[in-house]
Structure formats: C-alpha cells, structure tokens
Length: 98
Image (cartoon, rainbow, N blue to C red):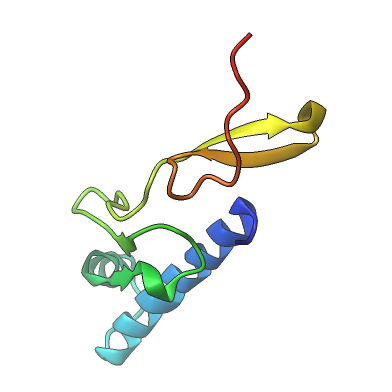
C-alpha cells in the first residue's frame, strides 16, 4: 500500500482525467459549468484506484461521498505515520493512551 500522500495524488489525477475525458468525449468545451456537470456524473469504483477506499463519487455539493475517513498516528518518536483505524485498512495497532 502506498503512502497516503501518493494515494491522494493518484486519486486526484485519476479524478481529473475522468472529468476531462467525460467533458471532451461529450464534445463540450472545458468550461467551469461543463467540468462541474462532468464531475457530478463520475463514479469510479475502488478497484480501479490505488487506495482502500470504496469509490470516487461526488454529490451535488461537491463532496466525495465515496471517500472514507481514517485515523493515522505518529510512531517511533514521531518519525513514522501509520494508519490505525478503521481496522480493515489499519497497518498497525494504535499506541495506548497514557
């Protein structure tokens, strides 16, 4: 599994590619209105992404409703950041609270 930064960049570029393709394939110009309409139509399943998340799909407010929250924790004296929740994507157990 890549770092969260690599995964976010991959999803961002993949989303941009999908929106541009949808707009251009429909023969429309790259205007703000057309791009917004295209982004509301995309629905990219998680198996096409480098991430553990379910999909890329935006609601009418522009929120990615296919995203998933996670919690990361700094380990090894603050030199390593790891995902600790949710369990299905956690790479380590959380440090106990002191």
